[in-house]
Length: 276
View 1 (cartoon, rainbow, N blue to C red):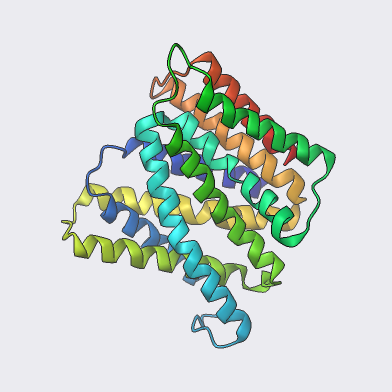
View 2: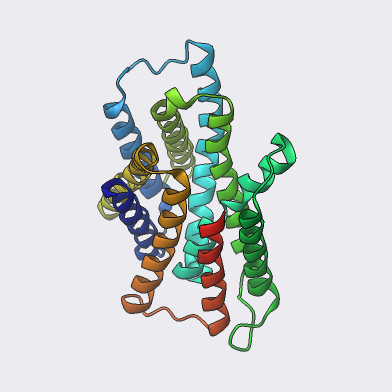
């Protein structure tokens, strides 16, 4: 349970850090340092420091990690944009709704059959999506619903990469997969920063270090939690816990307000996590 609570706190702190830095102009530096720190932690915790993909299993892991690294950067940037445009609470809710994507893709491509309760969770998720897009909230719709949908889809593809690792039976390379993912994300951000000639600023470097610590340990702790507790316990509690905690802090500390319809939407997403 310690690992699960730790993962929940680190993921929540990651989202709240994005909220506190939403006005930072040079996000490339912050994100690059974030992934540099996460990559270093990954390397330190690797039992075998040989990261050159020599075996077939390592090569498969490397390819999936490269794709996942690009998705990581995309998800973080879209999440950051959603926090600015749609608020922290809705951004947190829709980022965790992405778990629906691997469920549906597994049905289409891998022939998996969801249980009745999982279909119920899918139904709740669809209801939340329809609510946020079609029902006026406090007299008007959410300003940027398509941005929320993009976060849902790209974040869901990131979740799908973890599923692919399991399907290809690459579980022994879990830590290496994280290393390749963070390393690729770091390269993308650093090249982006160099091309744009972004100046280094102390504040953004410090925020990046904090994000990197939260980013790595949220991923590492959730992997540890799954080894001890059943995944059907870990993932719903983790997702719902992050959504609720971020909502509480956003309301009390950042004074962000949501309409009744938006609260219903978040409640539906929380309920869906329990069944998916």
